[in-house]
Image: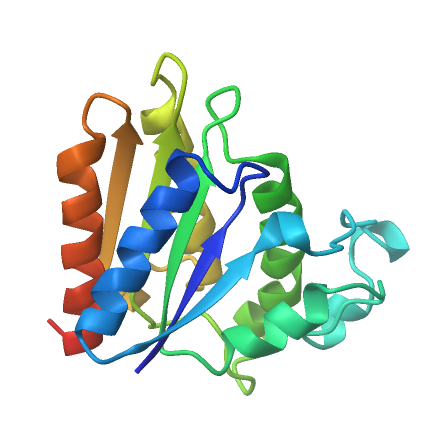
Length: 192
């Protein structure tokens, strides 16, 4: 089983990276393959909301912008599940995560209206992690926006969601939350 671990922090030594590594360990302990994607290492442009809000992404699952987005978008269709880890900035996902997922949401939105196509996200298990450094606040509101994101990506229907897990991590709960993330990733690989 292939699981994509998407992280979105510029800090390669911080809490977000630790959470991504915990997920990777869980995936590999279950004999799965972890596909690591660091959004901050990629060139992903912000959505232009082309053609009054719906460019070619309305007709197809492609984006007109030429950057690293399409490679990750294609790879998303080839994996069996996801772990999304973002630092918490101002009670929200990081800017790199918002930029990527804004475009992903648009490219997958047409599939909500055209049932003949297959959504790359729908019905695949996922884990969302909000890693709050500093004061450790904002995880709940960040996780709420992540839940809403996956609700949209799953055709606005909670019955389409398969296994999912949400973790708010801060420096006080880091030790046991890293274990929980690892365990949750292991369970996804095992199909539990």
